[in-house]
Structures are given as C-alpha cells and as structure tokens.
Length: 135
Image (cartoon, rainbow, N blue to C red; front, side, top):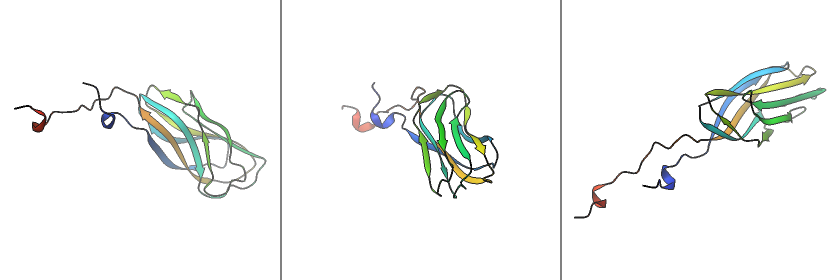
C-alpha cells in the first residue's frame, strides 16, 4: 500500500534558546536525532549586538557547516541569519553555534534553529476501518 501524503514525515523547525558567550568558541545548540536531513539552519539574536571589530558565526554539527560565517556584528535585536547548506545527521548530535569574535561584545541571548525532516522510514501506516470493508 502506498503511503498517503498525510502519513509521511513533515519538515519541522527545531529550536533552542541559548546565550552566545562574549568570547570566541562553541555554544551548544539544538539536539537533532539520527536520520535527520537539515535543510537550513540559522541564528537569531534576541538583543542588539555591539559593533566590534568582527563577530561571525557558523551553525554546524561539526561535520557540515549549515550556515557559514554569518555576520552578527552590530546586528539589531531580532536579526535572523540563515544558511541553506543541507546535510544529513546520521547519528544523534547537536547543531551548535561556533563564534569567531574580535572585540568584547558581552553575552548575547539568541535562538538557534534548524529546518529539518526525519528521513528514516515512515513507521505510520494507514489502517482499514469498517466502512472500507465491502459487505
């Protein structure tokens, strides 16, 4: 039996609120299960980022960089930066924000997110109901 569209896996947004440290390094992001195809990923700063010499971020699982060198320098509160490099998470992992900073911006509250779809075999099946059985 072919699966109907309503039984197939759908794309979802997985998000986590984090605090980006004021120094360069890795900020742990969202947990993503095995067998997930990440279609896009990004970061939203929730407060204004000071103007420093350089403030960039990569959104990555350590293997694939989904958003590469997005600039957060002097970004206004609510600014969303997105990358559209797709990649498969084959084993459960986190998608983190790795920052490169020159200057002292201080800690910045942020939201990291991925647009993803579970590409494992669909386990939901259609079932017959009484009205489907011919008398």
